[in-house]
Length: 169
Image (cartoon, rainbow, N blue to C red; front, side, top):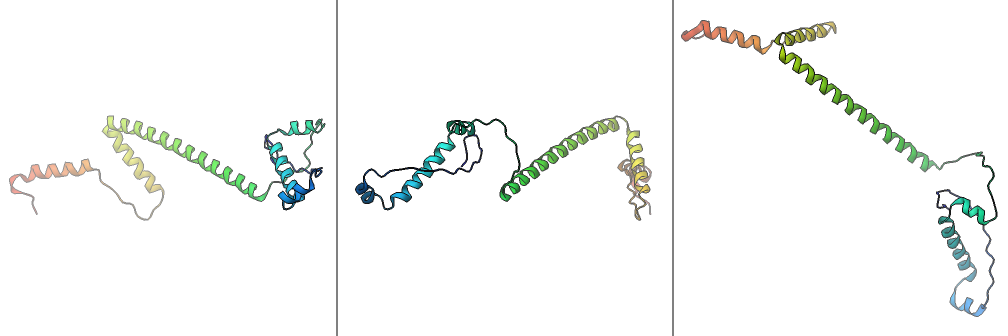
């Protein structure tokens, strides 16, 4: 039985009853003994479920002086549920931490882009740092990208030199 304060208790109870009218008992109920036991169980369960454990014990004339836990057994199903809950909580915390990291990284990138935007030379320095990092990894193939500014410079120079004649071959 589960008490009002969510304590699971096992109760052994005794039901004392007396049949006051045997004729009515036999005529109205198929099995009076069995029905009385079921009613007693239901009443006990309802009574226990609406009371705290200390109230139940007090009604029986029992005062708890001290409690020592000797053994705790959890059903396997409850163990699995608790493990799943703990795993879900860990995953939720990991997602929050990852989101906070992404937020900090995006702020740092925004600040870096503002610094680079203020100084074109900073972009070139960052480009060279990136190439240096790539070369330190000892990859077998390095793709060497050219800055678009450099390409547009040569395109403008070609137009200036070529004039109306068009590009030379």
